[in-house]
Length: 117
Length: 117
Image (cartoon, rainbow over all chains, first blue to last red; front, side, top):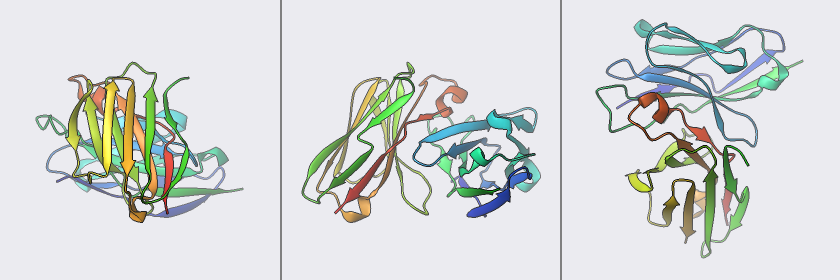
């Protein structure tokens, strides 16, 4: 069964500083990987996704993530955070072919990001 | 209205009440989902509908009863709930095609905050 671990429950970063949120997954093959963001009082919004190819993927709002097979990781990064980035961030994994028919996303428990001025 | 909407946004109900949550998507998608989000726990998939047919019931208690009258609307009927059912209930939709990329790209509503007293 697939699983996702986000080891950091809460991270505080100064505005303008760089950010890295960690995500580790457990899956028998190369899964499909996702990062979602949830602002207070809102649903989840897809930031970026990895299916195959270039292991560095670009997303919305200036975020990027790098897939590292050897480390089973898919860490999210941003070079300079803005106060509006304060939110909860969720990593998710889904089964890749030939495991179609069970397209359930498995989410991590989330990392809450606080931005200080 | 655009995207995925959910009503009501907040609901307080007693354990003997019957209520319903409503979700509507304006994206032309044909797959819809109900998730439960509890504090400190990963997002839990409850139900999946593809082209109005239920394709997933993730061992959800029968006090939760979904209904999908068409591809744009999804309901969650609630009765005789327990206090541990208090949570944020999120609806999502995606394109229900054979392409994994489209199936996994889920768009979420803002959720209904449910409190069971």
